[in-house]
Image 1 (cartoon, rainbow, N blue to C red):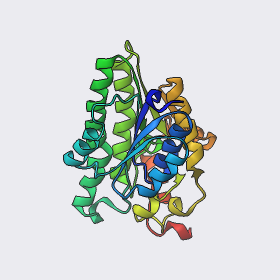
Image 2 (image 1 turned 30 degrees about the horizontal axis):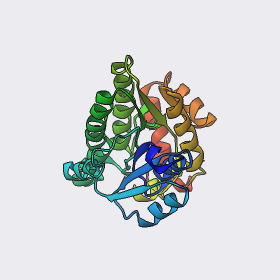
Image 3 (image 1 turned 135 degrees about the horizontal axis):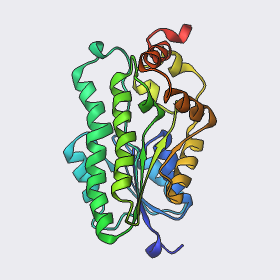
Length: 261
């Protein structure tokens, strides 16, 4: 595909894990890329360029208004055909034991920064009359997350928000898709200080598989997709299980020290 005709995809949280795999899917499927993350992206950009994409890398903290503005400004007015809003991170341990600045950083990354970027890019899409938005939610949003309470709360918000936004745009050519993975083999649990937990040390789903499922759902215009049969079953069970039971179940997976149980 000629460079001048390649559509542009904007992928956040693209330095590793699901975000990196989503960027790879975009590059393999004819998109140029703007990638953002709070860590250096030079090696990532070089890898994606080797797949045939033109890549612009932006290192910015999307928990801040300045970081979101920096990423948006890097577009230089070029239309975004696909926004893959994947940036996010977790935080383990008991809520009252967490530093409040770390709590707010999770909220500002997973919710505030994500919505700020969707708001700006979504308005541009509406003005053009087309676009695709993929938001990375989680099946964690279906259950109270004991010892991961803030993260699960942010994903409950994102899962709900994505469906509301999709409905608001149903009479347009803009699609909104929510990708809802379960525990995935990424750096997530290490960064969240959860490597002494059962969920942090158990076998997890491959990030490339999750990204393939999510990318296809976005291209097909689906409303949401739960990646993996096990996760589909878990999400179905969560929908009919009392919240108190779900919280206790989550505790057994995420409480510090459960890795030995």
